[in-house]
Image 1: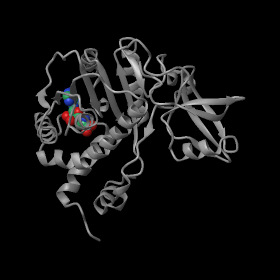
Image 2 (image 1 turned 90 degrees about the vertical axis):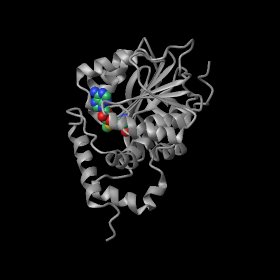
Image 3 (image 1 turned 180 degrees about the horizontal axis):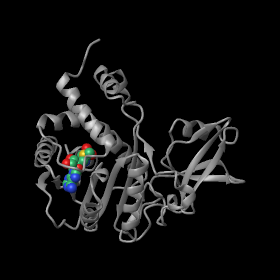
Length: 332
Ligand SMILES: C[S@@+](CC[C@H](N)C(=O)[O-])C[C@H]1O[C@@H](n2cnc3c(N)ncnc32)[C@H](O)[C@@H]1O
């Protein structure tokens, strides 16, 4: 069988994977060689990039964009998050990078300079320019509580925050704690459709966590190198769960109109029905959608298609339809 990854690459990739799975990344700076960053960037980092694509697609569908002119990618690693943001929104004048690893910052800066020659690439300062979008990606599992508290202090200086994490129960719960700490000073833009306490914090919802699934580009399934990567790492490349949180300084109007719901995770299919874990202002509840009541909607939800937020039509507590959220509905 043809091998697409050589032995040193596989050894380095396995070491990274084991560290992520064991949650031991916080112990010490683990970036040793620029080659490891390049390897990460083209594999695990690229998969994180697809999660960012999912988040940015949702924000576009919800007609939201940041107003800041500066980005800070904190815990930047190879810098995938900052680059995705710069590629999405053209208004940014500068990208500041911060990581405990000088090697990572150098790698991320070089890549960003190549891809975005008109954007000023800097090191993060202790004080943020007031119109800064803070970008955080896959850092929460590496930060002990004292450092997380310091990060919260920094976050309080930002105008907007986009935070993407692995879609695990523990990381999602940590992210929810960040939301609760920052709410008030900030308004929740997404995935939340409301400004109340997170509905997952009730005892009955303790087993659940706020996660979503990104779609990797379909080409990778025809790409022998990606397929080999998945096999060697024991990763199902189709499954890309993530958690995310987008916050902004409160504006005159709420970022999301009233009455909208967001689906958590994937609907669960039963005989002729779907069970949908739905988050809305009144809390988080499992709603049933019977196929016969709304076959088109049923098909779309089963495939993970459709708009990111729904205005459910309900009868006897069951979903009978969804009035699509029209882009622009939430604009000031
Ligand atoms: C899993 S990597 C994620 C990198 C990048 N944000 C991404 O999404 O691909 C976590 C990064 O956080 C950095 N990091 C860990 N603890 C940190 C700390 N206390 N201060 C700054 N950076 C830290 C690591 O060096 C590493 O680059």
